[in-house]
Structures are given as C-alpha cells and as structure tokens.
Amino acid sequence: AQKITQTQPGMFVQEKEAVTLDCTYDTSDPSYGLFWYKQPSSGEMIFLIYQGSYDQQNATEGRYSLNFQKARKSANLVISASQLGDSAMYFCAMREPYTGNQFYFGTGTSLTVIP
Amino acid sequence: EAGVAQSPRYKIIEKRQSVAFWCNPISGHATLYWYQQILGQGPKLLIQFQNNGVVDDSQLPKDRFSAERLKGVDSTLKIQPAKLEDSAVYLCASSFGTGGSSGANVLTFGAGSRLTVL
Image: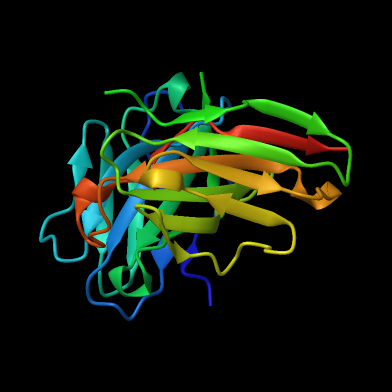
C-alpha cells in the first residue's frame, strides 16, 4: 500500500486566491511526522511546514497551513493568497520512527498560479 | 549556515559508463540520504546513512549502485555501469537526527545532480 497518496496531479489557482492540496497517509505507527515540500522548476526541495502526530493544533507557517485530520489520515496543505512564485511541484512526506525514520514521499501535485 | 552541497549539477554519459556524485551535508547533521527522482515522480530513497553506517539500502540496486560515507561526513554515490533508466535527478539530503515525530529533524536537500544516460 502507498504510504503517501496525492490524488491531484495538477491544480490551477487564481492569483490571490487560496488553494488546498490533498494528502492522505497510511501508517500504524502512533508517532510520525508529516511534512510538505515545494520543488520549483530549479529542482531544489524546499521545506514548507511540519505536523507531528501528537500535535493538538494545526501547523501554520506564514501563508501555509496544514489541515490535519488524524482520524481520516489526511494532511492537506492550504496556501492562502496565492502568488505567482507559488507555481511549483508540492510533495507531501511522512516520517515513521519505527521503520528506521525513512521519509516517504507522495507523487506530488503540480500547482500553477494564474495571474 | 551553509546548505547541502552536491556536485556535479549536470552529467551526461553513455550507457555502460560510470558516474559518481558527491554530497557534503550540513555540518553536524548525522543522517544523510540519497534519493532518486525520475521526471514526474516523487523522490525514491536509495540509501540512508546514520553517521558512517548504513541504516537502509533496501531500494539500492546493488548490482550497479554503491554509496559510501567515509568519516561520517560527505558521501559519494556511484553508478557503474549506467543504464538508460538511471536518467534522473539524484538528490542528497541531511538531517540533524532521526526523531520520527520531531519537527527539528527536517530533511534539508541539496540542489540535486541531474544525470542523463544516452
């Protein structure tokens, strides 16, 4: 079974609007971490936001927030007030301590911000 | 702090030739990862080091790929002989530790090494 599932290969959003990128995960480990990375066309992976499995509140980092629904095993990324520079690939990832702390990545969502 | 350094950024080789990629992680980062990212896909873990020991190399094609991390600092990934399907970006990443649910142990990536096998 896939550890991380991103079902949206491509998304479009109007500049200044908000967009939600979906991510579901699969684990039986009670302790895990969820991460979102941005990969612009230059290729470098840029860390955006982190959510721990025991965190009570949803994580926020500037315009990024993580909608964490533990029972549904989903960790959707919300980008508010989209900017042209947000156009990139976005990857959801999970780390499980009991599998040797591997980072599992999803297949990614390509986001295009339209002016 | 200086980021994760990788070289070369680009490499073009013929199939059956060999290639080596180098990675220098962030100073003090004990854990180092090599990922393969084929165009249009997410990164796939090849090997994970903790200091100079291998934690996980279950997805490393050991008949042609090898990696080492001497002295627990920088690392080299080698492919010999290369195949057409090895064309990809090879990403190196490092983290301070391996606490699974700790936000302090975020992976920091290098810019990647893009390999084209003709």
